[in-house]
Image 1 (cartoon, protein in one colour):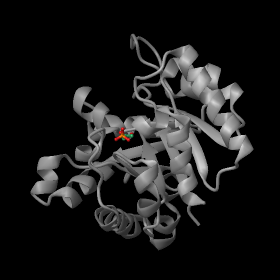
Image 2: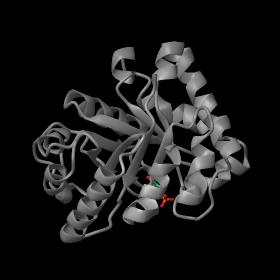
Image 3: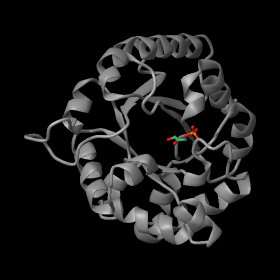
Image 4: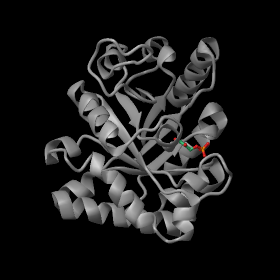
Length: 251
Ligand code: 13P
């Protein structure tokens, strides 16, 4: 059966020293009080090689927030999936709405990134979600269906290795959260699309995380929904007490 996962996305926050301190503090807190779900922290690239050796890999997985859509070569400033994996990281967030909107990442570019991540044994945490105008026009289902095209060219075996995150853009960093019912409705729809494409077993085994202003006070209600398998956490992942409060929603 699918895993419950709470993943942090640090975004462009914390310098190296602050990031190391945050990872150490989280590691100590989770060793003292073991989580009932998988826990992942996705950090800026430069933190990865320092953070992976200081966390207990049986408790905390580490991931990047992006990787290049090319294997290697003359792509100044880019970081490849192979480089990410060489730090000991096991995950990579791909398709975050901030990457799609600020850096022009398309369905096709993301398809390449997902394939390269998988080829390097990284687990993609693939993000989908609609903007406010699309939600107001009740187009959210169409939007996520179109975004899934990046991962629906995978074999069933490869699709089975990815994690999905539904993040309504209107809920990211805004303090507005999708209601548990809104999250459940679209997660169930996403799972139905997976079942149509790959069959019920693959759909049942796919973890679908919710992201967007998730906090200790709303995590339990959201994660209690049958198709919500955990969260992708931004702001609340930057403070151990908040992040652990969300992790503890599975207790
Ligand atoms: P917030 O939790 O800060 O709303 O961010 C969510 C997010 O974008 C995680 O990827």
